[in-house]
Length: 514
Image 1 (tube, one colour):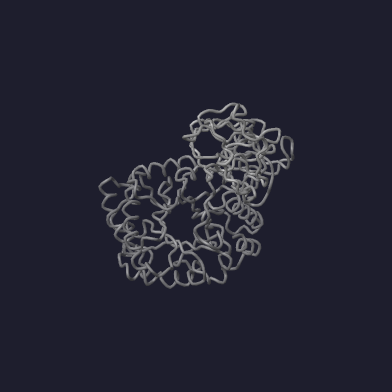
Image 2 (tube, helix red, strand yellow; image 1 turned 90 degrees about the vertical axis):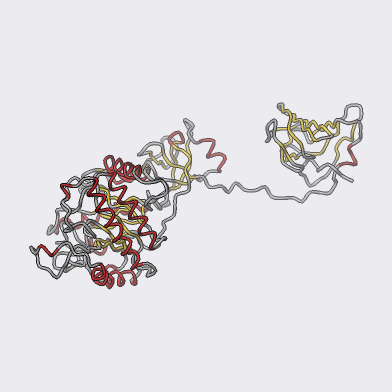
């Protein structure tokens, strides 16, 4: 009865030199490079350059003639575990400490040949510095692109080789970007990364800001074919039946009337296959409700928060189960310095309002994503504000994403990227909540309405912006929602002019960007 597993994984099960009781040695056929296995369960007690000592009670075994030893002293192994490879010549030697002939103890059953397992592990990498060059060939190859700080790329080399190179000077790794471009980049500026998250929503990444109270603000979905998102403010405060200048025009709290006013629009876009992002700004509750935004204090913010969160929960309750709302956005540009179209809040107060509102909405609809209002103060101040907001929230309550409004950013050097590269802003915000995606809920070109000569440049700017989101930050940006559909909707450069006529180059190109 055999008690030892055969030590060499070869098709020929042979004892090359029989057991010698004077030396205690038996030689097993094993050409160089043969996988050598533990003949019994035990513990590795010592290792030298070509020898290994296995304590397999009641037998102690010394393997000789090894190379590429794969275990370390102290390791516990089972019978059949690979522990090394054979060296030269074509045998390994075993010394088994007991004055017995082990010949009859070996299992002589020929092993089933198993193909070596391929190295199928995919290794993901990202740069340690922004702007890392990708080249056609290592060292002096032609530059073919630059990696942003949080761009995740895939190694095209075996996992073991990749991991051995990462962080090492003078090493280069063959990589593929998410847009399919392949090249080489310096290993000493790379680190291991997690697989990038996949988008949580299907369809086009692009979107449009709409306004049901504007005469052009609620277009037919067929005119927006190719666009994946629409963003609408749920403005309960406005009473559209009252004329401009009437004090009663703002401060409305009739939630049912507001819901009935919005639902047909939301339903038509959702049924057309678009995702609806519903924004609950200060116009949900607060505008015209007796709050003076320039004279707020913690007590007044607390009063507002309580009422606001309650209304937000009621809104979610009415839409729950309909499938019409893809996400809720809480407040708008809370870190603004201007305050013309938004209301600024201290980050601690916003953290409290966000906490109460998330809890209220999730009680009514536990599955719908809830994101922050669009941060507008730039990569440094805005990301710092976001961190302070999170610090003011309990650890068990978190938004499902951070929203930003990166006006004036895009492809570096473009005339409409006057504030710099979009990658700078995305990099700063993406590390605030690294496990959550970013949402671009407003972007576009401002102060250019009526200038038809800039349309080609605007179209080029939009294409470059979306390309960055789709390729350099694939899976990290959920949507990029243009401001706005039409000229005269504030000062955004619309896809259609103030008469509703499509701006041919921009309108057509934008709808095909997603």
